[in-house]
Each structure stands twice: as structure tokens, then as C-alpha cells.
Length: 223
Image (cartoon, rainbow, N blue to C red; front, side, top):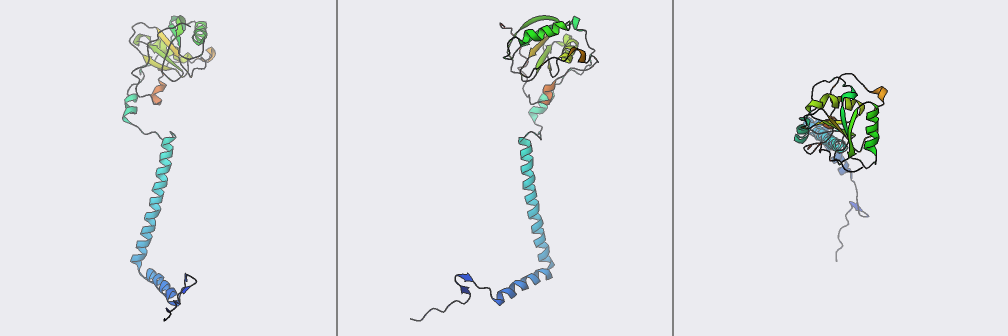
């Protein structure tokens, strides 16, 4: 039986590079340099690839920023919430001795309403109801009044930093304070700003979309 001719281009299972292979490679490089159309096409492909990689990297960075809250995308819901703004009127600081104030505690801290009410009373506010209540609001406190009590509510907010103003349908000038989870303390009496200003509604800068259930009219409970 005749033996099959040995393939001289294969040595121990590896392809042997011959002179003709090398010449063909260099000829191809020379043709590339001598053919500007092919050269531009290859450069264009490289640029497109770099741009695609950059776009993917940028998309990942933006997605992470959105997830971390560093970038906020306006939505129809957020615009709807922004439409409910604080009263634009400016108010003078109303003397505390003319303000009727009710204090409610919606936190789990016992005795908070009474201790805060005593602080307001020491500042000459006229304290009425003091009781516990419930609220789904997350923040420092709610300051609630009718249209007639907005000036009084402004003065209350100056003593209660970070509080959020809400208007309800009452016709008298009384004000309700509903203490919530983030409450820490009142402003020290000597640091209360008594210059004219506006009511404060910090919820406008947060993601509270549906505030139709806020504030809940306080229902005093024992405590």
C-alpha cells in the first residue's frame, strides 16, 4: 500500500509559516497603505467601535446615577405634585400670645406632645388640645391651619424648623402641630427668626406625589 505523502506545512500538529505566507502578509499591508479607501474604511470602523463603547459606558454611569438618586427624571406625577405649592403671600411674625395652638404626637415617643406643648406655652403661645394621634406623613412635623390662620402658622413654623405647612377648611385662626418621626427639637427662643417671610412646604422637594390624604384631621387619643 502506497503511503500518503507527508504534509510539509504541518509540524507536530502546528501550521508552518512559509516564505510565501510572509510575503502575502506584507503585500496585504502594502496594499492597505497604497489604498486610501480601504485605510479610511478601517479607521471609520475603529472610530465607530470606540463611540459604541463610550455610549455603553455612559449609559451605565447614567443608570447608576438615577438608581442612586443623583439624577432625578421629571415625571408627570412629580409635576402634578409641584403644582400644589405653598401660599405665596409674605407674613409678619405674629406675636405668640395671640396664637391658639394645638399639639399632637404621632410618634411612638410617649409624652412628646406634652413636653413640646409646654415649650410653646413657655414662649407665650396659647396651648389648647394636647394629645396623641396618627399620621402617615414622614418628616419633622405638620403645621395645619385654615386660610385665616396662615400668619399664625408662619410664626409657628419659625419655632419649628423643617415643619411642613398644610391648609385645611377651618375658618378660625387656630393652628395644629402634628409631630412626626423626624422631629428633634424646637428652635431655641433666642434664635427664632422674626423677620417677614413665607410659609414653608419642604414636601415639594421630596417624592410625595399623592398628598390627598394629608393631613388627616387629628383625632385625639388617650395619652
